[in-house]
Length: 486
Image: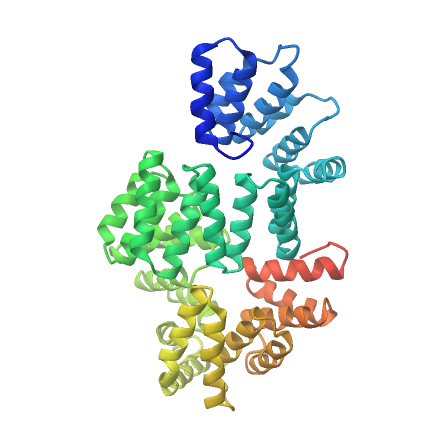
């Protein structure tokens, strides 16, 4: 049952068997392995500790105990449990990789992963870890390759499905991602990561009722105490304009300083509640720690202006206002803040507002295309952009050109993406999103090149916190420079 992914049935069967033979060590080992499959590290640890001295089962118990300790965040103890002997199984290598990663020793983790895959090339555990490593580096193609191999060798492995779902989410293939997360939940119904990923997809699509239902299910199953669940519930309340409800949920979470999205949301809530000093503290913490979000930067700038820090407010909003896709509200705030210290820039912002008003006629189509992108429907977005470009062949709308280029790229037409991207780059030569689009399109069209690397490095320098830009830059630099990355 366990081998075929029927974890719930296996749990019931082993419980019934132990009722008849409570001292059977083979059943005890199986009980520990089932607890691991269910994500119940505490039960696994309690069960497996009793088998360490068993002559026949001690080695297997030790490896599974180490895995349970790793699962509960005790990486150092997991290594102590394994000891210093040579590893004879894929599980032992996987635990060592995970424990060293958890402890921040990535060199050791990489060494054990390489050794483990050399000995056990078909281990789903090791293939998932290799996919995770490539995902962290930003190489989606290699991560996808390891994911496919892991699913082939471990067709009932929850972690393999989870990796595949995470990759599909990054690629905005939401239907595929949901299938993988549903497969995870079929194996482990209480798997928090899969539940929250499904909620995130629903929220991204604007399907708030579905997201709410998933979060309520997760809350009921997990006792309502998971910070991520509370955060999403607070986010939904905030988006619905229920500021006090969002504040109440955030307050129930206690200290959110270690949870950047919640820190940002708490800052936005404070700003809406007329608490600029508190908003400044929270939003500065979020931004200083590498977070980036247009709403956070705008709210931060407005809060600074409200307490009289005009110069700091202008410095805060300028990166947002200088972006090619800055909305009229941001440009208006930036123009007012720059009026005294940088009148020429203020005038440029006002000119851009006038241009946005002149282009108001294409706003509904641009909004429809944006909605299609959020849903992962690049074909629909490409159709909208294509029609807009045919209707406006001489357009100098940077956002239209850049977004049209990226839609072409997502549909596999890298040559057209390069042409459209270069038009956008000529109009906005320092915009990080445009630099990223052209650099990535060049790579997709012709492979790694000095120009692609240079453009992507400039994009990273301008927007180092953007995960997608950094991923693209790392992939190209890795191929160009033998793994150096950026």
